[in-house]
Image (cartoon, rainbow, N blue to C red; front, top):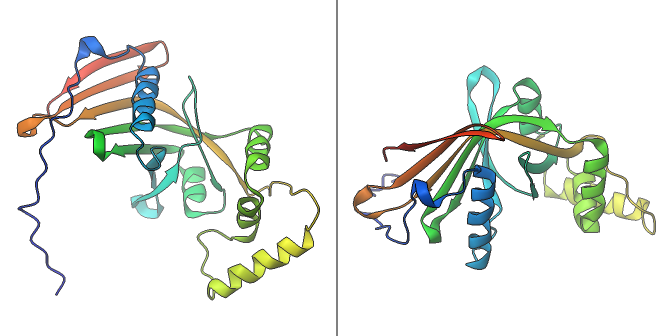
Amino acid sequence: MVKRDLSALRQEYAAASLEEHSVNPDPLLQFAAWFDQALEAGLPEPNAMTLATMGPGGMPNARVVLLKELDERGFVFYTNYQSWKGKELENNPLASLVFLWLELHRQVRIRGWTEKLSERESDTYFLSRPRESQLGAMASPQSEVVPGREFLEARFRELEEKYRGKPLVRPAHWGGYRLFPESIEFWQGRTGRLHDRLLYIGKPGFWKLQRLAP
C-alpha cells in the first residue's frame, strides 16, 4: 500500500517577519545576508539548492546541486557538461534555483539564465577540489547508464593508478555555470499561513521590489 494521508502534518512558522523597509534594495546582498544567517545557525549544507531545467519535450527536470560561489553577477555551480543538466542547459539556458532553510522557515526562489564559466575559472575551482573529487569527476560518465557500481569503482582505480604522483587536469567536459538572476523571491514563514513573500524583478542596479500574497 502506497497511499499516505498527510493532511494532518502541519508546522506553524513564527520565527521572523520580512518587511519591505527592512530588506536590502539589492537582492543579491539580501541573499548574502540570509545565507550568512543560515551559516551562523549551523544548518547542514546551507548551500544546497534545487536546480530546475527544461528537459526534452518541455518536461521540467530538477535536482539538488551545491552553490559554490556568489557575487554581484549571480550564482555559480559546477557539473559535468555531458550530464542531463548540462545538455538541457545547452538547449535552453533558462533555469531556476530554490534554497530551503527549513529551520529558519525561509525559502528563496531564483529565476534567470545561465552561461558557462571561463575555462580559467573552471580550472581554478577544479584544482581546489580534493584529489578524490577530481578523480570522481574524471571517472563518472554522469547521467549515463552503467552496468553497476563496480564499473565506476574500476574506472576510478584505473585513473588513480594512471595519475599516481602526477597532477590532475580538469576534463574538458566538466566545469561551471553562472546563473544570472532576473527575479529573486524571498519567502518567510508566518503564523496562520499568512507568509511574507517579497519579489525582486529586474537586473543589477535596476531592481523593483513587490510584495506577493502567500
